[in-house]
Image 1 (cartoon, helix red, strand yellow):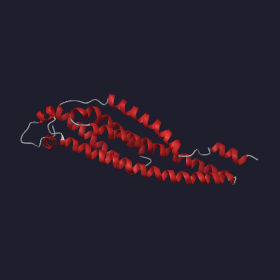
Image 2 (cartoon, one colour; image 1 turned 90 degrees about the vertical axis):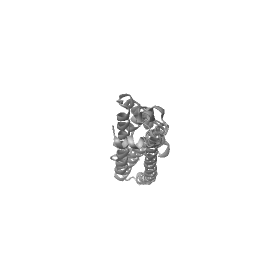
Image 3 (cartoon, helix red, strand yellow; image 1 turned 30 degrees about the vertical axis):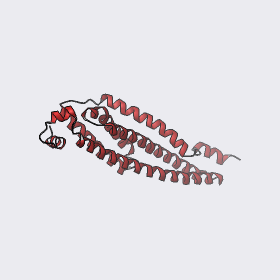
Image 4 (cartoon, one colour; image 1 turned 90 degrees about the horizontal axis):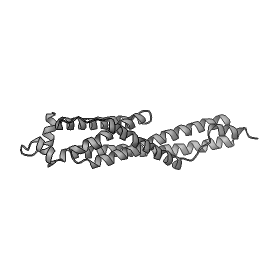
Length: 213
């Protein structure tokens, strides 16, 4: 058992750790960790929102350039801008999916009150954070690294709780839960991106347009 963890959790006048776990008399240290993690996750989501707004502006600019190139029957340039628009939309969907998933993590973390909630809420939350980290690695490396650090904090919390309670937590069911949340987030994000980003001419439609008499 981690001496540091026992000391942090058990701060009052020699009360035993087992009593603390049983009665949840003094859960403040756990809540402090959760509060800190929630704050860091909210900061990540703010950065994702800023990046999404920048991508919206970039997409608008590329879209207008694509349309102008098509009107000028500049086939090569129109196709280039159309492809760039497509890439921006893909990155935007990744960002929105990540935002929605992290929001679910925050909601889960805010329900944690004692040791018993860690297995039910923190383990799946850690799985979601790891998955989002991987998705953002090629889009916003800085945010991906921050999520990596947050994931390590969650894993450490779960490990210390396991040591303190003598329990072994399984991640199988939590992994399925995380995948479900990510799938739902991706579905909602697809609609949000469709609403927030105008449809753009595909490569084939551009080619057809510029080749029409």
